[in-house]
Image 1: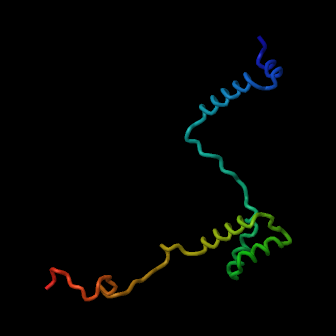
Image 2: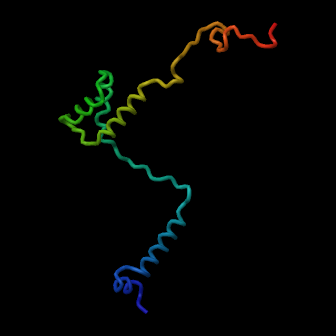
Image 3: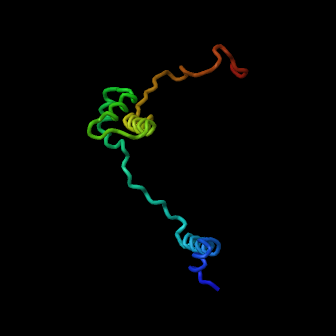
Length: 128
């Protein structure tokens, strides 16, 4: 009976070896903890270079298309990413600069019952 390495070499890596690798992989996965969090990727975005410029451009109220053109023609770090990624980044920065609805103070002034919705002049059956 041939050994596993000889059989793998003869057959061309199929059959028995594939089965053993599958069993080994399944056993390895079963030993890992179930509640393990996925690893975080530590990548920087190609747009992070333009964070200060995007803020300045938003202060100048430039359209996003013009911001993208300026980023692509930058002499130090020309932007080579996709338009969608740039638009999403600008949207994220723009939303972070706007106050949330909970932070906005709203004062409602009116007399009690002034803005009550109902049929004008209608009378209920129990009223005198």
